[in-house]
Amino acid sequence: MLMYAGKECTEEFFALHNKWVLDKYAKFKIGMLPEEEFKAEDTVNLYDDLAFPSKVPYAEMPNLSRKGWLRPAWYTESHERFLKAWRQMEHEVILPKAVEGHKLGEFPDKDFMLDLGKRGYFACMNGRSVMPLAKKLGIVLPGGLDPLDFDMWHEQLCLMERAKAQAQDSSYMSSAIDGMSISLPAICEFATPAIVERVAKEVLLGEKMSCLAVTEAQVGSDVANLVTKAEKITENGKEYYVVNGMKKWITGGMYSDYFVTAVRTGDAGAFGVSLLVVEKEKDNGLTVKYIKSSKVGAQETAWVFYDNVKVPVENLLGQENFGFLAIMANFNHERWMIICGSLGAFRRVLQDLWLWCMQREVFGKKLIKQPVIRFKL
Image (cartoon, rainbow, N blue to C red):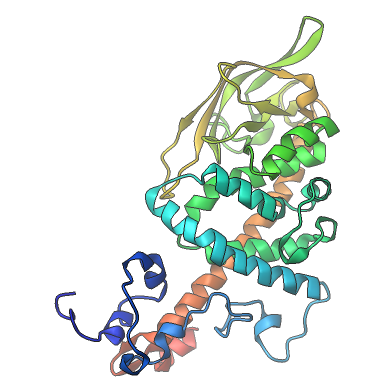
């Protein structure tokens, strides 16, 4: 900084930094040079996150960015409107909060959560199973999409866009979404209408949070052999499950109000497992403990302990001792989310790589003009 202080140093800056650094530290901006004094090439304009379609190779699906590629049969005007609106929401509404929250290690505040709920952000993150309820709640999805018209390809687009936009500041929104998006679909698919109406409504609107509590320290992800127990009792003429045990690596556990919990209600093996919605209430025996993990910023991963937690039998998801099937069905959607998010993240990596090669100058020319670099790309 001392070397270039008081001088025009745009080219020197972009030899070291990508454009997103300017976005991240926008608070330090004090003004703009007159256009005639701005000497750099078009480097600063290489990034246009709202461009549709992006001109950067591989930043978009092939049918959007390459001439001659036919659009897949599923891709309609509805998907294009949705994608444009979602991209705008990610960059104008969410990313400014995510950048700051990620840096400070904060969890999204209540007003922001409620705003995202109204915008349909949480509904889209949870797939088609939540859409009938979203319709009932009067939620209109980005691009003016009716919830009942939302399909798996709309979901693919929003999951990819989220991963692309939040690649560098992911922990802020991950803390709010990841636990919810692997638990709420199970509630909407397998819970009683009364539970869906109450629990799913609160989560979709951003009023409360949910998470999936399956993994255990004793058995890892070997769901068929989990050891957390739930025994039935009758108290004052009402039936309850009493849950005892612990879960580990529970995404979203630190901030959740509802825990979709896998428990053993029968014999050993897969067909002795049930799935319950366990509500966290004051002094009801459910406690959480923070697990420090490699993800930086806002953290949410937790131990979850159950000490004689009473759960109404109405909170059973599906049938008793058939919870393993519900868990596996729910995992299908979780894996679909991971795949779509991975594709979006890969495209962001390729986008940034291309832009850096077009920007960075070494040995007297841009990296993109080096044959070995072009070959690798």
